[in-house]
Image 1 (cartoon, rainbow, N blue to C red):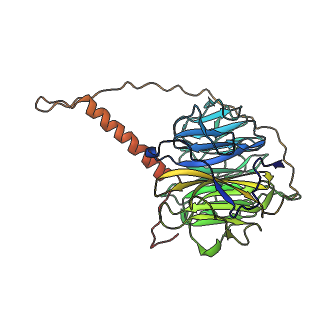
Image 2 (image 1 turned 120 degrees about the horizontal axis):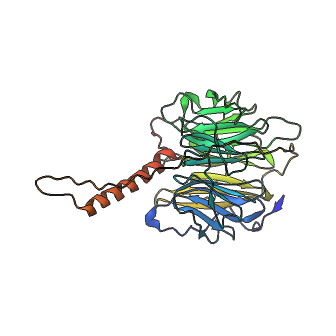
Image 3 (image 1 turned 180 degrees about the horizontal axis):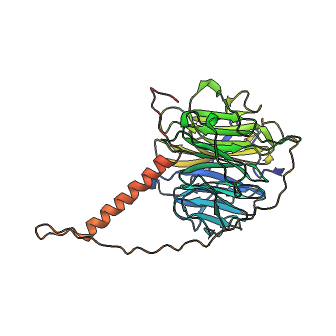
Length: 412
C-alpha cells in the first residue's frame, strides 16, 4: 500500500475535492473522459480529454499538455506505474515509459486506429477499438482477436492463462453487446453474455475486481443503458443491481478498490437529462449508497482508484450547463481496509504480428462545379469542410461515448 501524498483534512465536510480545471479554452467544450493516477506516485495524474492527454505532478493542482493533442478516449497505467498507454480516436495507441512525459505510437499490427478502451493485466494488454478487440504481450505489437464488426467500448481481463476477456459494445442495433472469450489470442471463441446486457442494451463500462485469497474467479460488473449488472461466476450468470433511491442511470463508469473487491464505485448520467450521480457499495453490491457529496457535477464520465491509505478515488465529470469536463478526487476514509488477495503471476503472451500495411496517400482533389460560368470559391469549400470536421467530431463524442440521452418518459 502506498501512503497518499495528500492527507485528509480533519475538518473536511465532504469526500470530494475538485481538481483544478485543465487549461483548455472553454469555447472548445473539452470533455474529460478519464483521470488516472500513477500507482507508484499517486500525486502524478494523467487525464484523457477531447483535446489530448494532460499531466499533473501535484495531484491536479496544475496541468501541462503532452505531445498527444487529438481526441483521446482513455489512458491506463501498467500495474507498477512504469508504463502508460493512451487510446486515441485516430492515432491508435500511444505508449510512454516515463510517466507520460514522452510518447511513441505503437500500432504494429493494429488495423483500427480508433482505440476506445484499454485493459492492462500481468500477461497482456487488451484494446477495444472501433473494429473489434486487439491483444498484445508487450504493448508494441498487436494481433486481432475478434469481434471485428463491433465498436468495442470497454474491455476487462478476467483470466490470465489462457487469457480471458470480457468485451462490451455500445452499438444500438445489436441483439447482443456483451461477449466473453476464455482463450484470447489462441482461439477467440467469443460467446454472447445476454444476462449482462438485457435486450442488447449498449454497454458503456466493464470492470473486474481482485480475487480474494482462496478464490479463483474475480467479480465482474457491467454498466449499460439499462443500469448495472453483477456476476460472481465470471459472466455465466448475472444479477441486476438496485442502486440507492431506486435511481435509473446510464452507467458509464465502474471502479473496484484494487485491494478489496467488496468496495466498488459506480457513476453515470442520463446523457444531459436529469439524473446521474455516483454511488458506492462496501459489501460487494448487496447495498448501495450515494457517494457524491461535493462532486462538481453528477454527470460522471469516468472513475479510477489508487491503492493508497486512505483509498483514492478519481472521477471525471461533465458540466452540462457550461459544456466542459472536469475532475475530482476523494480520499475515502470510511471504506473498509484491504483484504488478503490471491497472488497473480504469469508470462506475457506471445503475439505474432504481420507487418502493418502502409496506407496509400490519397491526393486532395479540389472539385470545381461550373454553372453559368461561376465556380465555387476555394475558401468557401475549405470553410464547409472545416464545419463538417467539427460536426463529425461532435457527433463522434455524442454517439460513441457514454452520453446517451434517455427519454424521460421511457426510463431504462
